[in-house]
Image 1: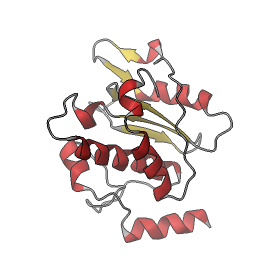
Image 2: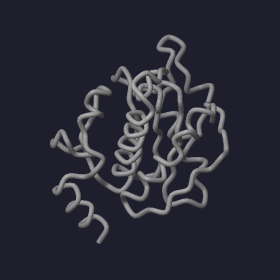
Image 3: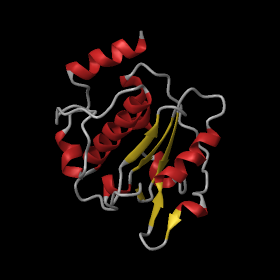
Length: 169
């Protein structure tokens, strides 16, 4: 976890399920890494996800892939926010649950858990070489809102599944 572990560790099973979608052996480390001070933008009240990626990349030692998960709001330049970001060349990603939960639980835990699963699996898909998909129900579809996350299925479409098979050969 990046930052506070309380909310992010509550989703440990979803992170492991996301890894298992790709037949990866996932592990959640119960280690809290403070968010980099230089990554915080006080004007936006958000953390720069690209700087957090650098931080995650430094923690990756001994792992093929690494994903940092945070309960803080993140962004990349030219975008208001992102749910996550991945760098395939370094094999690392950052996932934020901030906008997936909106800090409230009135919609129920199951929908939040499914959102975390989908977005964690989406970022892992990028790490495995998949790009965004035009099929709006595909796991690899770009989501610009929670509603778009909810519209996606927690599986790859046939095209992305075939592409993943080709990439892994």
